[in-house]
Image 1 (cartoon, helix red, strand yellow):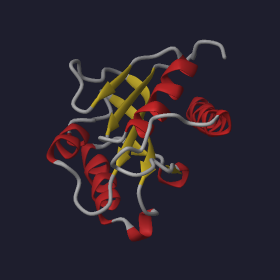
Image 2: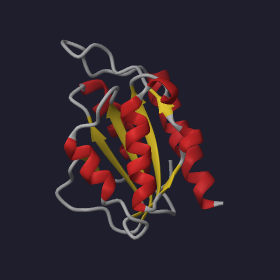
Image 3: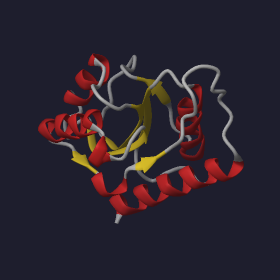
Length: 148
């Protein structure tokens, strides 16, 4: 895949190795950096920030504070990939979406990608070629959408 014409960054907020591997797959495809939340360096004029998270009930403080700081000057668009229940059944995810909206960034709510992060203990970090291909295809569609 060619280097992106838009500025992309990948973040993750999870203890699950498999979710981190999904984040790394996107970062490798777009030749960009991947960081834990909170990152050592803040986002700056990113066209898309992908955030991977394991979330269900209450978001952790680091993730919530990071999302609060994602103003349009730092991130124009945020795309989420989630290890957890669908938005309708996920109070924590709905909270994060609201925090991002309050910060003023565009949340791509219709494009949330749900992943299976595996069990929390001894879950492993390997993802199949099919899983890697699917998440990279999703990420490319997101970038194409915001670039149009």
